[in-house]
Image 1 (tube, one colour):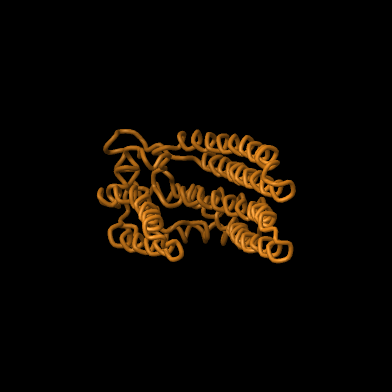
Image 2 (cartoon, rainbow, N blue to C red; image 1 turned 90 degrees about the vertical axis):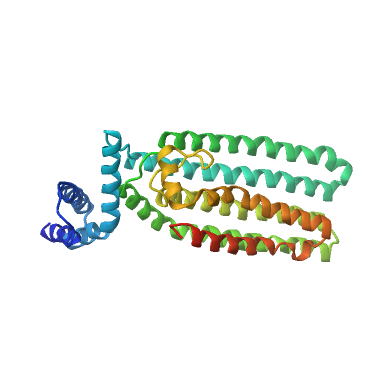
Length: 324
């Protein structure tokens, strides 16, 4: 434990010693001791446990920033800042993991319903498809939409409990570890999604060239692509939950209605005009895309507006945002 204590002392070299920094050192040491014992109980050697504890420390700048935020809040409000706990952050991630599955399944089922519609059209003709085939579409929607509602409601309820509460370094460090653990799964989801979406084109080409049945190929395209889309959604939603916790000091439940603490932090990082631009930027880009397509018929190269707009927005954000 002496190694850990010496390491904590080294973090504070060159920093004025105050009652707050003393308390911070004591808190860090107590937390480190608990983590050390936890790692030892997991069968880690002494060196492995010490290395694990040290590796989990955040930077001293982050710790001091957190301490200053808390102290400023106490000075202004007269009571301690409401923090998100480790258990609450764990519940937040679990809810988003479950929601990722539900949303992914919902989209996949709806796409399968549409695939069944095209398959029935190819097998039995348009007359049957308009009746029997549409049944699959409605069944898919009737199954998928409730899954969206369940997932959305659970996320909204969880987010509301955490809204505008402070996210401490301890919570961020724990989430950072979970994000690193999930990174390999995320890469797999993205690769699998891309591969499946590319492979989904093959049936269209095959059935069109060999059997002159493009519609049947479209059915298989939607079926295969539905699995790819599931992977995209599953990986994206879970990774997004990590990012949501890591990239802000105060939890934001609704981007359109920030809490007072989150709003103050956002105003400090981004000018008001840029926050307004963020809300209308992409709708304007989409509107320009549609206008140019319908008025000029330039659908072939019109899609380039999106990467160009993305690069332009990134440049603006880098210049005008303090986080850029």
